[in-house]
Length: 121
Image (cartoon, rainbow, N blue to C red):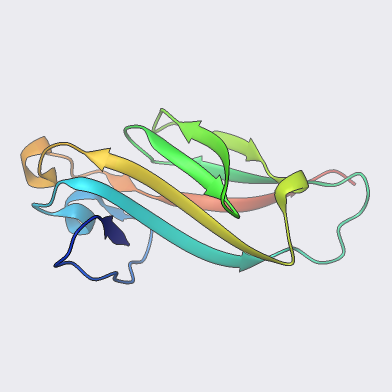
């Protein structure tokens, strides 16, 4: 996790999903979460790879390998097709703007569940 534009906060590792207040505490500003992963092996020609996001309250920009692939606008599950964007090594980023300290927002809910799902034969 990295606070964008912060000169005092250094990037830190976080484990997701986690409670909103535990992740963001009394901070506000633009935050970026990054995850590296490798392309699934042995994909068949009819198989599709999706990212499935659950528990992402607010508005989040989703980028894969520096390409914008989606905008999440609901804490409900959202599916993003990424097969055509995959490379042997991938970097997933999600970013959002937190306008007020998380502790003032009263959010004790989980945030940040994401899964890689392979569909098809």
